[in-house]
Length: 83
Image (cartoon, rainbow, N blue to C red):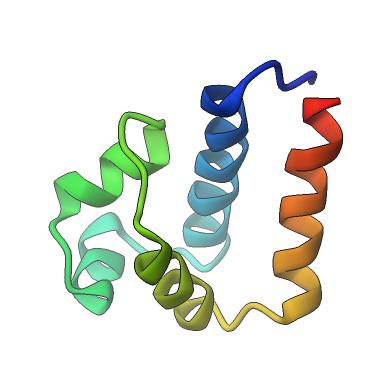
């Protein structure tokens, strides 16, 4: 997939976020409660309709216990696909 703009880059993140949740068999309700947001907000992030803040991104990465390497690889993927 080739990412042509910022919107497409956020869709890469949205797919990643959905995969992380489903890989752990978590419901949207469970993840939303853990992050202190509504299920509707999480749904919008997972479908690319809205974007989390920088602070919330950090909270998401901590919740899923993402290593610095994993976060860097995610953003490297986004960056490579934008080229």
